[in-house]
Amino acid sequence: MCGICGEVTFDGSSASVRAVAAMADAMAPRGPDGAGILARDRVAFGHRRLTIIDLSTRSAQPMTDPELGLSIVFNGCIYNYPELRQELQGKGYRFFSSGDTEVILKAYHAWGTECVKRFHGMFAFVIHERDSQRVVMARDRFGIKPFYLAETKGRIRFASSLQAILAAGDVDTSIDPVALHHYMSFHAVVPPPRTILSGVRKLPPATVRVIEPDGRSREEVYWRVSYERTAEDLATSGEVWRDRVLEALRLSVSRRMVADVPVGVLLSGGVDSSVIVSLLAEAGQTGLQTFSIGFEDAHGEVGNEYQYSDLIAERFGTDHHKIFIPSTEMIDSMPATVAAMPEPMVSYDNVGFFLLSREVSKHIKVVQSGQGADEVFGGYHWYPPMASANDPLDAYRRAFFDRTNERMAAEISPAYRADHDASLEFVRDHFELPGADDPVDKALRIDSTVMLVDDPVKRVDAMTMAWGLEARVPFLDHELCELAARIPPEHKLKDGGKGVLKDVARLLVPHEVIDRKKGYFPVPALKYISGPVLDMVRDVLGASAAKDRGLFTQSYLDTLFADPPAHITPLRGSELWQVALLEMWLQSHRI
Image (cartoon, rainbow, N blue to C red; front, side, top):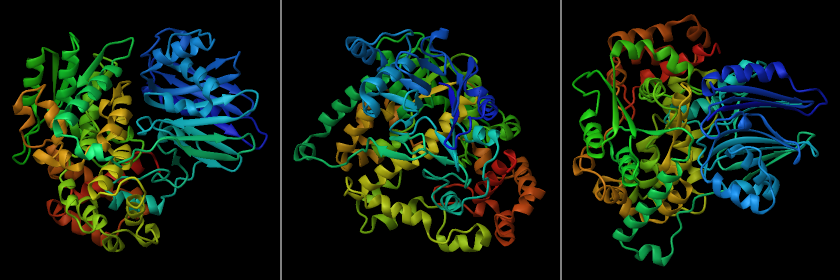
């Protein structure tokens, strides 16, 4: 829910209300139900509200508790807020609202920065202490809710979207060469704290940052997932792991039904979303609204998975909505889709989620979605080869990286090249961290805590919130993920991947959904660049802005245009779409 922003100064000047208002206005789609600004000397907060919990104005933000001397802006949802509220009331705290925002304020007063360890949910928040003038920032464990920062001498700004940071002005918009290296090599994933722009950074997931009045700050990582196992874990049978996962999923899905408005499900027809629907039906949920999207077929590839989503909708009696998008509408929607991206996001299904969210938002404000299951339970094709890899780093690089550092020397113009193999060094350092000794565990950890954050999760948040729709991801419940990390890799890799989750699914959903070829959000017209899509790409890369910028060598662009289908990354992405999407994003944001 919502969008947050603000400015804090350290040089004696007052915070700019104009800048905060501009940031808040830029996030209007994230929070169409209300807006507010709080300015107090060197601190100014802005907020856009999507009403999900406590629909009254008592939970409007920015929220101030005069008795405690605390003010907050908050984006997200704390699913266990009723339990925390009861505990805090037992400590003598009095509440003036019935929502989760005030619970965060009281919890911070009671437990300090340790309060984040008690929260089950997705969140990004900033708290200002009136008496000490200290500012505290925090982001949830998996970075489900975004948090962008722009720091200059004497000032820091923050917002839920990079677009909002740009709207305030005075930002270094030069291209960060290391971030560009990640974008071109690490499958368009730019890990925090970097973004593609030198002047904008991200607060990493599971991080609390405390900023003193003079600008000094410290950061603490409050949660890490461990893949270390006890002897008992190693001896536990697959059936026991299945039953434990089922119970954890039941709890996770149930937690994400906390709302004062109806909650639906994005139903792709795959195992993950089908399990969510089945568990809600099992819990007695009636009138559940489910939503599926389909596109025109292209190049012999079917553009929808209706046969599977229809099967689940019929089995569990949902109020099902099938949304069909013709290719012309998809192409016409690309500029708006790119404008909604807080960072360049190359996956074909961005436009799918964007258009799906547009239609879903006409019916409902909150949905559950299946992101995270592949990264947590081992569903991708590169995990099985990791199990027998003598060199895990090289095996992962070969499967996941779009191109080598050597290739980039011929493809990226000299002014934009990183001076080292940034992506390979990043993965090497991550693989060497303690807590994941098995090669499969190393891959699962980096995928679930880095790749997932800045690809699927960011994509879903950006595309849903562009239409004032909140997406909740039960497979990223941190207790469920801690349990999954303890499960030995062989239980995850069986049955072609996600073995233990498929064992759970066999207790819940039809076998046709489980024993099918793995599917992805199909957008075939973008996967095979031709016709109008190719024309659009030519226009973008031929524009004067692209030529003046000169990110890529002309010889590389000529090679791509000569035969677009011949240049496909190991993960089956189009190289031409990758370079065009980056330039499209830069032009969309007038960079």
